[in-house]
Image (cartoon, rainbow, N blue to C red; front, side, top):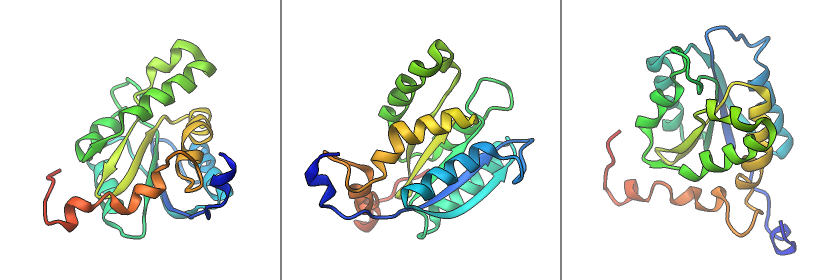
Length: 185
């Protein structure tokens, strides 16, 4: 951030955290805990939290419901981005995207490459916009969640970040809806 950015006020966002896993429980969800700790430390509000199994209908239903909630600005998912047969989070969520955020995946992989080298190829982290809600699909490891938050999300979800950030365009994500146009998902 530069000096002029500090003159802008911090705007806390309402963020939901969804863990996608067949085995995690609220007691041992380290990746979800990592994201909650990071977002709350940054000054944002935890709007909702949940765990769903690695099943497309369950993942999609939760993301659709949260994206319709006017009190949720951002959804962070963790888990299910690998290549195994049960890793279906991108398949569940990408069809919902009205706008893809291709740059997120590129920057995530650059950061991840610096930490784990070519092993970053085993992640299908992605992001997009669903009904005026930002959705970030993150790997299930606490380290990857830390990297995504510390290297991308902390700055982009901060209104003070310059030259641009996701917060300042959040009110305009639904312009197509306010004009009466529709995007089918």
